[in-house]
Image (cartoon, rainbow, N blue to C red; front, top):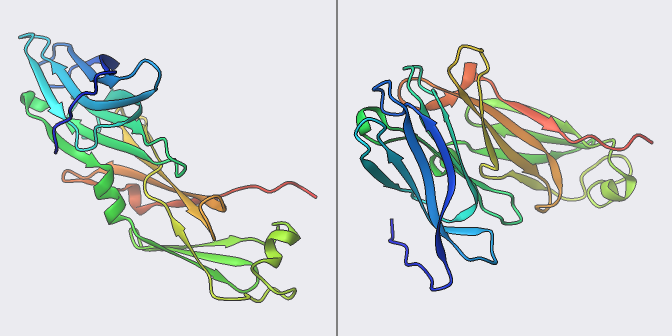
Length: 243
C-alpha cells in the first residue's frame, strides 16, 4: 500500500465508530474509521481502521488496501462462528458503476487478519452474459456452476427492435456483463447469531445503464474463506411497467 499524503485543505476526521469485543477478551473494544476530508466534499481519503483495546487502552492502526471513498462505515458481528465480533468495513466508490469497497477483518488476540477482500471476490466470481434468440439472455456463473435465463419479452418494442428482428431473432451476436461487487450486506440467514455476507452485482446488457438484473450471492465462512452459502446464488430481474 502506498502512504497517503494529506492535502492542505483536508482535515482529520472520524467517519465511523462502533463498540464490541473484537479481540476475544470479553471486554468491550472501540473501533474507528479515520481519514481526511475537505470541508466542501464528502470524499474521504487516507481511510484507516483503528482499534482501541478496551482492557489496555492501547491503539492499533490497520491501513486499508483501498483507502479512499464515500461514506466509510463499520459493522461489528461474528462472521466466523467463534463468538467474537469481526469487523466489516464498507465504503462507496461514488462512480457511475455504483461499486463498493468492502473488507472483513478478524482482530482475535489483537492480531488483524483479512477475511474478505472485495478485489479477491471480484477475481473469483466470473460470469458470461449471452443474448439468445426469442428475447432471452443466458447468464452463466462459474462459482457456483449455475445458469440463469432472463426473459426480455416484456421490454418495450423500441428496446427490443434494437436487438431483435420482428420474429425474435438476434440482429447480431451480443454479450452483456456482470459488474464487480456493488453492495455487500451482513445477514444472519440462519438466525443463529453468526452473520453471513450477501453480495450484489449488477447484470448489464449493451451498456452500463442497460440494467438486466441483480446477481445475489450469499456467502458463509467455511473456516478458510467465504464461499456461496449452501452453494446458492440468485438472479433477480427488474420489473417492467404493466401495459
